[in-house]
Image (tube, rainbow, N blue to C red):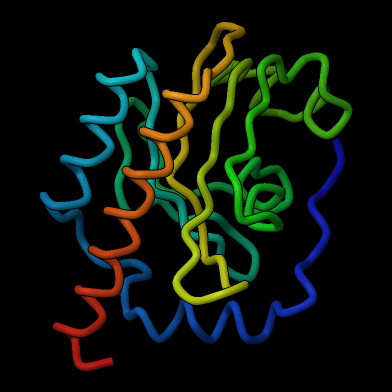
Length: 167
């Protein structure tokens, strides 16, 4: 398994994530509705709002997955936060970064992953809105545009929540 490298701006990224005052907060309908809509729109069994912390990825909202966090080292999202465009993995079993990942070899048996980075200011990406399927698939340009639009909604909600919290 190929562990994602640490972003060059990791200290700034972690500080920005902490300033959102969202880690380990209870579920919220506004975020839950987004992942439910994403799962339905894309026909995937799993959709998540994932925040990449120091050593874990924590799910602010999750649809189709029981756990609330996983180890950062095995996270697909840890790779996706390195770029501003969506990361799409059509078949994780054929991608050298993920082929021997525990989440590919075992539950939830990830084959397809698409992660749109949550960029809260230029170059500072704190997590992803991601789609996961147990079967191989692709996204076309329209699908990617919809995913990125939903990502923009998540970013607006994160920044709005931070403003409400006084950050």
